[in-house]
Amino acid sequence: MSTKKIWVLAIIFGLIMSILFFIVISYNGSTNQVATATSLESEEVEETEEEIPQTIEIAEGKRAISIAVNEVQSVSGFVRPGSFVDLVTVLPLPAGEESTSQILLNNVKVLAVGKTFVDEYSENLDSYQMVTLEVSPEDGAALAFAQETGVSTLMLRGEEDSELSPRVNISLEQLKKGKMSK
Image (cartoon, rainbow, N blue to C red; front, side, top):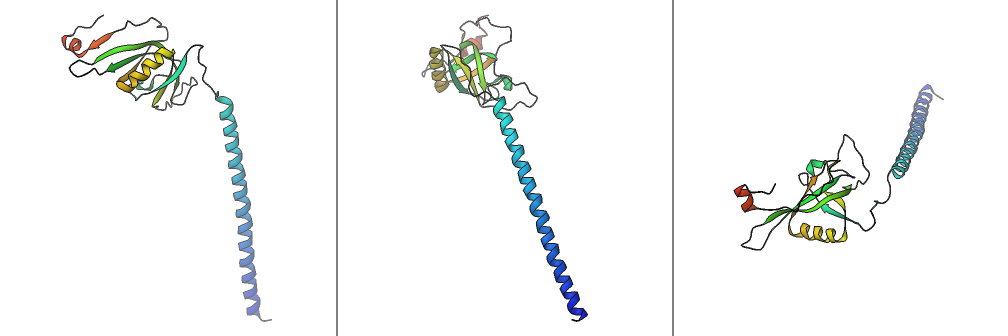
């Protein structure tokens, strides 16, 4: 066998061994990465399932109802689960009559914001498009009707404020004249 043939066989053998070595190392590394990623994901899911309750607690005789809100209607996102709010509604009236703004519901408990119903105070407050409130069946019906016909806005109450607001009715004419009840 000539020297040239020996060199060619050595180079071919070296290339084959290098390719096999690369495949073995790459295959084992990707398997470990997949296994590690899978185990991390399963641990995260288990932690998440343990931390989040599965249902909202609703007082006896009350119902949960969700309403659509934007950032302004939700007091710039400061409404959190466990907060209490008043609900102000602007209802349009038939042609020729003025629309009015009124406090529709008083001291209503917020059960959830968005899909969060655990009281979480974090620096990263996510925006939400709905708020779930705890109301009586009659108040729920009134709120559903008000949402379909008018615009509703939440007024956040202080933690110690449990006094009922008077049933205020404000019209555009009263605003123009500066006559509002105090």
